[in-house]
Length: 169
Image (tube, rainbow, N blue to C red; front, side):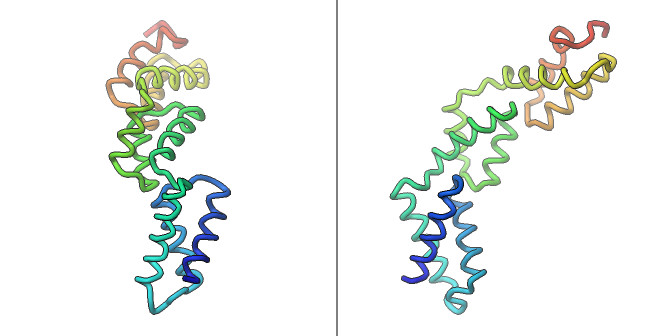
């Protein structure tokens, strides 16, 4: 019981600073258990305590993975446009399930081509007076690194000379 109370207080402190996924918070709680060596001979019981704390936080709606996924997408796209492939990879790394990721991406109604065009327009400004072919190569690599699909990349790079690139191919 003492362990659970300590873990709940720690979890609330963490959640006061920023949002967490259930998996991310559970990892932090388990690290705390190991650091404090709580129940060194009773690891299963303390892991159960961490799981119970996570469940209680979900009941209180202080931990909500679907909401986290929606806000994460919104935040990421506000800071820098990126493709759905990159978003999926980053959200999976945070411990979100494929189902939650899929629903969040569907709810966001992302238009990957528009996002790719926005990212490309911003990047083209930094490419200066490079030859058109060099710009296209750099732009394609940039978009691929941002997680855009090949179809979006081909369309955007193919039309980039109309959006600020050189018109001499």
